[in-house]
Image 1 (cartoon, chains in turn yellow, red, orange, cyan):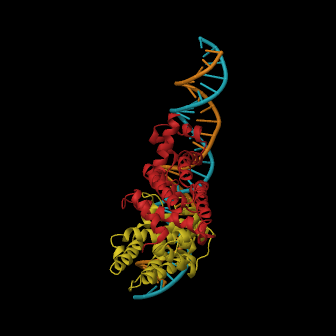
Image 2 (cartoon, helix red, strand yellow; image 1 turned 30 degrees about the horizontal axis):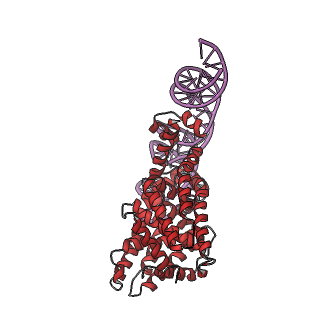
Image 3 (cartoon, chains in turn purple, blue, orange, cyan; image 1 turned 90 degrees about the vertical axis):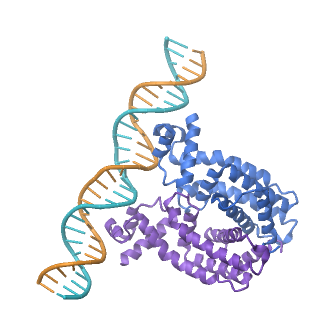
Length: 188
Length: 188
DNA sequence: TTGAGTCTATACCGATCGGTATAATTTGTC
DNA sequence: GACAAATTATACCGATCGGTATAGACTCAA
């Protein structure tokens, strides 16, 4: 079962660098130093490997996001906590975050996108809930939670994209700036 | 040369639906009703087909963006024009926009991402220039043009993402709202 | 120590991958 | 109608694709 984890580790690395479709199972097993039946014993299929990988890496991320996203009457604070959680996770799991982004924007009928969809969907639902609950305190937000959730995550991911490109550092100050800009605009 | 265009048309459709890696040249030529040597006569390689496709579809998009992004002292107006240009182009070229997004977020060592990079880069440069020029009128923007360009495009693409998902309509009102929110925040 | 279950390797499957050598066919020009 | 160039098809290349049948090796409980 050390092989099992190592297969996921290498697959994560390779998928993140070159993409799920472009990486063959042969390459994964050779990088680990085992043979194909080993992989198929643990994961049944290439897709099974991907799903296991998403569960192992995505589960903890959703837990952290959920913990960060409990709205308690202060939207500014909640969004800042969420932004910090995203930034920290992206930094601690750079490789996975890169892969997850690629899969999220992959074509709708691709295996990669179909595999990631539940994971992305849950993120959106958690974020939408924040804006829905906040609308009880800020009436002018009402009915726009989908747009705001997508827009907010778009901002977050734009910053993380720059970080993955070595153009930017992620830290709590940037989280503050991002949230502040989202709430009050770039002119303020 | 009718075959040439039709090969690009079908390739665009297939790449957009299932991804560059997952679609074989065999499938492309069969969809058009020709054989492989025809494709290789026009494009030399699968990658050549992709590059030709990006030039044909991406060129006009960059022209439109460049025209929309001439800053003339009014940042609000310029950003609105840009947002409208993006929205209109995404609506008129839904398939290409989907493909271009997938390639933009594809893994850095994938062929798809390497092919799209100059195209994405030029978009960023055009947007950065807007914010750089606007900083002459709005001093508090200075030194943040990279973040703002990425953030603004992130917002735009978040909205287009919802549109491609059939969750939202793109129109001039949404362009206004998006820009207004970017400039003044969701509270205003 | 035997037997069941887990794990892994050898060796193979048919299908598809991107790409091409060769030649026939079409097209436009003189 | 002759000829060159552009275009297309037939048939093939070696390599790799995801996946598996079979059989050893290992662990562990009885």
